[in-house]
Image 1 (cartoon, rainbow, N blue to C red):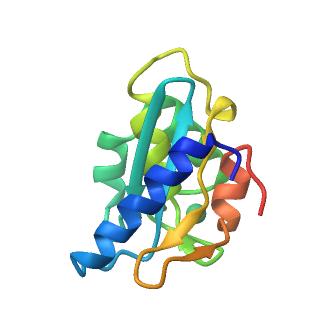
Image 2 (cartoon, rainbow, N blue to C red):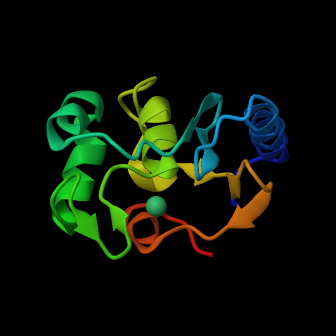
Length: 130
Ligand SMILES: [Zn+2]
């Protein structure tokens, strides 16, 4: 976590709500830059085409340096992480935000509210560490 305390609290509250609703995504996480905020769960079934349509050019460009969208890199499918979708929501709000300016909440597993590590793809994409 390198985001504000208020975003971290918001993400925890939202993870609780997911648990109450018995929705069961693996990960829930938030991203922010100044007043711009986004949060998301992982999107495990998005195809390359869907990701290409959804992601900002900046984020797509960065991910494509690492590998092919929707293909497995390390343990996860590139572009399907909650971090990517939270970041994308922030980037969409202002064209001048750079990817390395984004800060992130911890990632939580809503089912258990356990904090989970960022995956290698996210460590390589964003300015974060576990
Ligand atoms: Zn990840």
